[in-house]
Length: 203
Image (cartoon, rainbow, N blue to C red; front, side, top):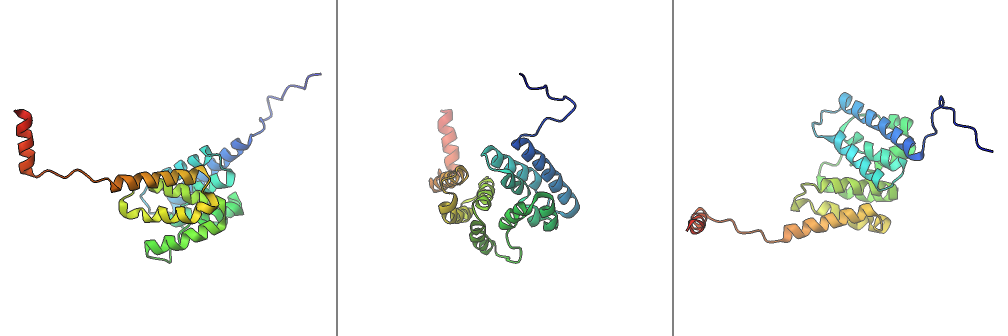
């Protein structure tokens, strides 16, 4: 006996990823609304937040990590109420966002992350994964002076997430940048040396 055909008038049941994608869509609308209403930040935060969530999605992390990754910058750049996040997306998402938010009362940037990283790691694996993904994004255009920040997080988080792909990606990126910065750069030619070189090439 065959099973009865599905009723075409009823919506198809959502897969787990479809449910997560629906929540990510809601998170994106929340993010866009919050920046329209509350933020004066002109950086492409919304685009970076989407990229971060998609990275976490591609790496196979669950719904709470993906949604919190999408919204991780909300408290930093806007006055959007945390209780609204908890109401719309659940307490776990709001906790993960709190764990990844730097303390605005600390003015010194180094002191900020020295306080934030141990706190983030203490909240557990999911919080640390989001921070690792955030730092991976920040390595784009990172200068030599900024290398201490991701190195500090890598050292603190290794016992917790050191076997995960996101930690390894961050580690590999930092090591590659370190090698690039330690490679001696070619000496710049003086105007006289440049002229002599051009003369030799023409000869």
